[in-house]
Image 1 (spheres, rainbow, N blue to C red):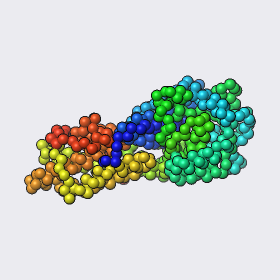
Image 2: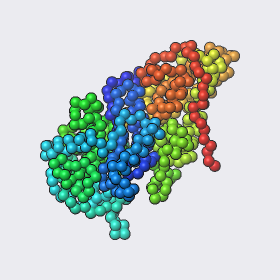
Image 3: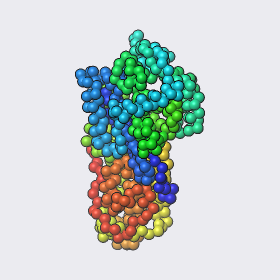
Image 4: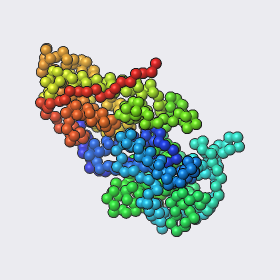
Length: 515
Ligand code: MET
């Protein structure tokens, strides 16, 4: 426990801002969940945290979705953006801010950044001629495309169209060497490492200047001094991360939180975050973020998820069926964070029944019921671990440090695995120590065993709070922990013996496994 100190630094943690062309699905919930868990962990460490999510509302893709819905783009984005706000409540997200790119403060920030880039001679007027995929809101070189039945597609499968129009350009070609130096100096800037290698290879192959304005539609932020142009939606979107901290007002109190600790992104938008974004920032004389973490995608029962297959996963329905905390647990437990994973009902039910209800739930219930029956419903006094208790005690004492090290690298699955390994060992300990049989034969030893189990449960519940906040609050209530003693640094203070404990209630509801 000694290696988890109260940390006084601050953390700025972000999710992508989501396009409002469609309602939220499990992929959105997954990105934001990861950010939420890290934000909650940092707060538990005592850090000052700002956790941001929001919606990306400009560009051709959103404009087209509004047209298809027969709505004015602002009314349309108001409506869809609200469904993303609602998701944060459904999923129990603890975001400190929610940003929309149609807000005035954001337009101001975009124009300020643009003006700075112009001042620094990083922008020039030219003409773009090339391929564009509206679905990806991305430009592609001819060598990146594949052709099927005479139609050209981006590597993502999005159809491309030929665009020819006047455009402002950002001098991205000047930044390849400086980006490579930044990656070199910050080896964990892009995680996981496999993704980093892809980005490095791409940058090494040479960067061309980037078209950053459009003239063929108007749903965007106007380019300062040239009303015929709106900004390319990605320079607009990326700027959200600094808008929310008050940019361009560098005296704003939130500005101190820049640079971000982590931008969580899906692997499909890594290029924008790991290449364009640091280049824009460095070109404007601002620090680049400390990390971009690219996570993978879910399949549904082994199948690629797509609207046309009709197998899009609705997080609201999952929360209703399985409960919020089991879902949150499953999403981060099942798949190594950074890799693709399969969403399967039976896997979720197995995790819920096996690890949550059986392993953790029963351990808590057995221990706390025995305290009610055999210890007069009060917490037994702490005693020094005997040889029989030493292994579990040492493992539990090391756990906060182990979990913290994993979360520093966004290894959510490894953090959970470490906690669950200790839960399994605590179950082995209770079986061997058999405190239920000790009341008659050795009552003092019986109480000591229950106290060791209580100490272990307290650590498990404290560490699991970011993953399952509601259920762990209940467990901590049952363990008699006052609100003020639920942070990481409180773990070094022992609870006094004699504390009255309430009778336990089940934490998890098992689900019938479909045949
Ligand atoms: N709107 C983009 C998406 O949903 C993310 C933008 S993050 C600055 O893919």
